[in-house]
Structures are given as structure tokens and as C-alpha cells.
Length: 377
Image 1: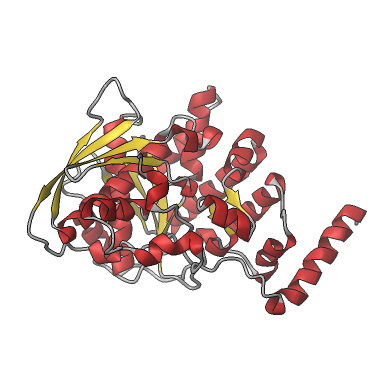
Image 2: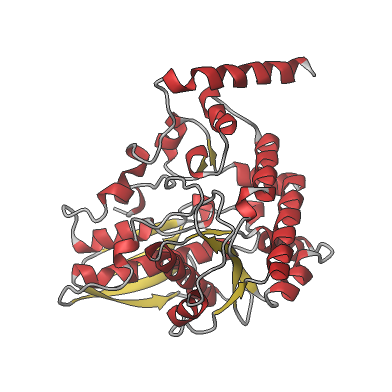
């Protein structure tokens, strides 16, 4: 064992001994970086800002939170924050637009409860491509809307899922959720052979991403290691929201923590283990790959599905590694590998992959930036 490795192991062992009494725990979902989850809906905010608050709690790729809002009582504009992109992990910008669609769905789901109707106009200005949507607000009688109460309870669960089949009604219920969202098809893989193929492809794609230095470093850019970093940035992926054993979580006590290469190896290990346990895998598929308005609809569909899943005692996690490698192949004109694999599994234009099941172990939410950080003044 090298002296560097011996030093690392000694530090990790020491951390494991002192963690219970250290008084220096990483955030567990209750600190300042998580206030938006617990404050929603903030009665001190006007209705239009409560809708922004709902949007902030949406799913999004790598918790990049790629949004900005321009707000008035009559209109909310959703702008794409291109500085919060995933770089080589999202080379055609597909995932970022899907994340913006998730925010739109949360906003539209929450609006009736605050006495507003929401009319969404996607990409209203050809001369301003970052203006993703304009949402017109009209005053109505407040009314409850299904799934709105789940907005602050929906979290991505990256832990182990039970080895149990889905209830028979789940697939039909999820399909019914999407009947008003044109051009988005749900593919649910439940047979043992289909699940094995998706799992094997996801593991292989994760290894390919980690081996691709540019992709792996682009992913690592959004890794938040220490408490001060989490509170300062309030975005990205954290140990407390990621499936990790006690030893891995203890790394958070060590200060700087692992580099991109080491984190990549943890990712592979978790993908080979708990993060590909599932009752089913699935995908959202569209007629074309890069139509921006359709990608927004994919995001709306995923957010709606995830809210329903959370409301019915299930859990879910996006698994987009094969999709990200497919996009990398297209952007770099590489030999096609994961594109054909995806086409065989889910169809030619798969946009978002995921797993669904029943949580064996659960983890807390990811940090969120507050309303005043994302609203233009």
C-alpha cells in the first residue's frame, strides 16, 4: 500500500471513530440550505412568489437548478440559466431543458391552490432563446389540485429499493397522467430480462462516463462536499442525498474529500449496487430528440409522474447514464454504442430514464437556492 493510500485510510478510520461525537455533522436536510423545502408555501410571500418557490422544488439534472425568473403579479417568465449547464454531461442541452419543464409543472400544479390559473407559452420570443416560457397568471377561486400537496415531499431517492413487483394498477395510472401531454410516451420495463438489460446498460454507461475524463469532471463540478460549501452554493449533489455507507459518509468529515476520479469510482460502485435495484425501469420517449418545446413537455411529464409516485408510497430516481452517453456519441461523432442499446430497449428517441420501486433506505432532500437568489430584480 502506498504512503498516500495509508494516509487516506488512517484519516478515514479516524473519522469513523470520532463521527458520532464530533458535533460536526453534515447537513441532514434541516439546515439553512434546505429552508425552501420546509418553508413552502411561505405565507409571507405573494402568490406569484409562492409559485416560484414551488418551481424551485422541482426535479432537475444534478441539482443544477438551471433557472431564473422574472416575476410580476400577472406574468412569470422562466429563463434558462446557461451558466448552470452540465457541459460534457449534457452536450446537446437536453437535460437542462427537461429540468426547466419540471419547474413549469410544479408551478402549474401549485397555481390553483393559490388562487391563480397558469397559462404556459413555451419559447415565446425567437430572439430570446433563453426565455424558456412565459406563464400568464389570472386570479381565480382557490381550489385544491391533485398532487399539489406532494410538492415539498417529493425527493429523489438514491438508496436501495425492495425487490418487489409494482402493484398492477401503477402502469395504467402513470399512463393516465400523461394523456394531455402530447408526444410523450411512457415505456415501463418490468420483466426480469428487460430490467436486467437496463441495469447492465446503465452500469456500462456509468463506467464509460467515468472513463471519459471530460464527462466525469463535468459531473464532479456539481459535487458538494462540506457543510460550508453546501450552505454557500445550495445546489449540486451531496453525501446526505446520495446512497453511501457509513464509511463513505464519513469522508465528508475530512475536509476537501475525494477528487473527481475517486468520486467516479464511488458512483460506479453505487450503480453496480443499490442504485440499480428497482421494481421497474422506465423511460419517457418522444418522436424527435432535440425539439425544445417537446423537451419541456418531457420535464412536465417526469415531474407529474414523480409527484404521483411520492403521493402513493413509491420512490424514484432518474437514471440517465445511457442517455448521456448516447448524446456524447452524437455530439462528438463517436462510434454509436449506447444509442442502439437505448433504441432496442425503449425506442429511438428516449429522453429520460428512471427506476421506480419501494424504498428500503431513504435519504433526505438536496439543497435548494431560495427565492431571492433566482428572481431577477
